Length: 285
Image 1 (spheres, rainbow, N blue to C red):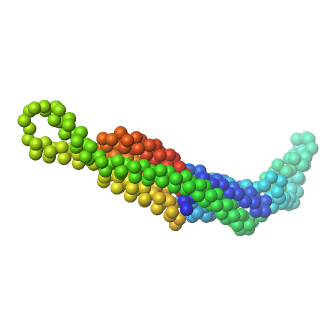
Image 2 (tube, helix red, strand yellow; image 1 turned 90 degrees about the horizontal axis):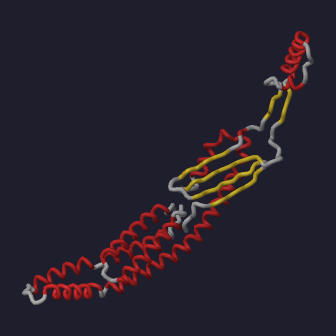
Image 3 (cartoon, helix red, strand yellow; image 1 turned 135 degrees about the horizontal axis):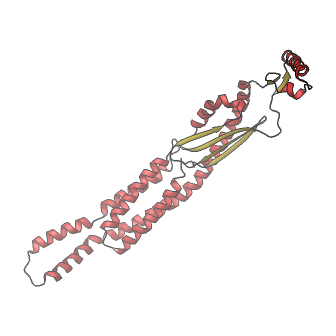
């Protein structure tokens, strides 16, 4: 089952909220936003996410929930505070004025922030990241199922077009030969002409109008596309894009060679359907 590149997953663990968002992108791009206390683990976060995706642009955000305990505490460095206070009193005596607590607290090192051990925090957050990643993958799979249903229907439409072209193409060489002979004889009138040579030249022209090989290849590409949609072991988006290029190439060739207006209309409808398929396939990982 194909997976979409578009998805969303989230989880809460302790005081942290984790969000993972994915959108379409030709390559694999991962952006990570972490709180300061977890910044040392950006590579670990990136590696965990990278191993789960084939391509697409993915944003991973880990943040503190508002109002939650940060796991930090404040302490006073009493020896430094006492020394600083003595200095402030001396300065006040020398220059006038009274020292205040604001002046004391502004001195670096007087207040010490004791934060929770970073490794301990990461071990607590990691299961939440994996939970959010699982939700993200489920979201992509659900979207992928919807895409596959649509693509299956459109490939069925193209198969119907191909079958109709093949049915009409079976009569095309005879019609093309008859039309050419009539036009040539009308142009030459009563002039003497080598009937054998004329038949040979007409046969060559008719052969150039034959679209049987193109229609066989078109059917093969359509079958390959449908088969690729069933692959679950690896990303398939780029392969689908390549097959669509081949489908479009065969339709263009058929359109340039056909002499029948009915087939020309089918080619136009087919190319329109291919463009719709391409738009949807761009969402597939």
